[in-house]
Image (cartoon, one colour):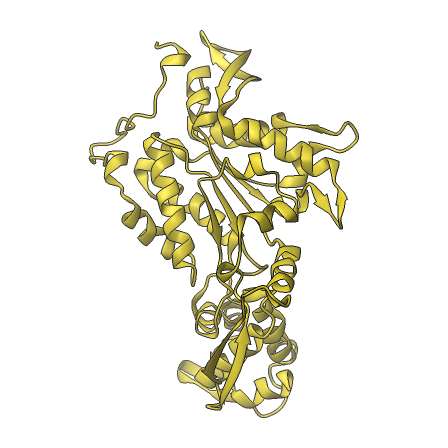
Length: 387
């Protein structure tokens, strides 16, 4: 059996007669197409993610990313779809140790210390699922070192909060910085050695892991917005003409963080420069436009419309929605860019909840084929709610 230090990120041995592609042959456009099946409206961000995954799986250079986006723009969705990609692409079986963890869980607040063991424990659980029954130390080491670490709400761990130093944020950023630089961590666990389970200590090289950190950075939007509006800044917001779902034309002034963000803005927000330097790219997720919000409402796996549709099937009722009604809901959700796709749910729920409670109320039900009934969400129903 080869020594632990000799383990490399080579192409995995096939477990079946079906030939597997080399990692180098699964290029970023292929990865992009796979991710796009589960993430809507963030093609630019997915290109960065695809390149990062390619770098990680080929083992050449690190592909760490920082994702910035308002709530509801899809940061967690991107993380979940990275995990889905690894699970569905056979060649990526060695990389399935993906963990998604909240940033504040990585710091012991009482002792004010960074806890890498909490991170490795979460990764170990996934690694054991990959390694299978009776994993050897070598099996677990390979799986753990190939892990993808998704850390959410990283913005809550800024070094400065409300203009005051935040010691917890400094501890977290410095701790993660060390891991992302490539630290060797002595990590104890149980593995099978010579036919029995024993406690062993693995020398984990964290430099082989991929780190994807994300956060809403809500204060950053206001910070940059105020800087842009400050007299003498030399910058100005964009004005464009749009057509509403009802066909009306109006002028709107919009603020897109990506048009104005500078590295100094992140430092002023409270991100430690040395920590930021460990990311290959900072990726800004778009605020979702009406067209994408409408598509999410009609097609996304997390769509409140599709969830409600399945609910009504229990009562032998077909739930439909008019095209204009879907556009009006998406338009209403787009008015609050800070909640993104999450705004679809409360709007749609308010519309459909009375019918979920009592489908026979009013005169909205129609007969359908096969003895079932049909309920259609109309534009008038939406207007009564969003008025």
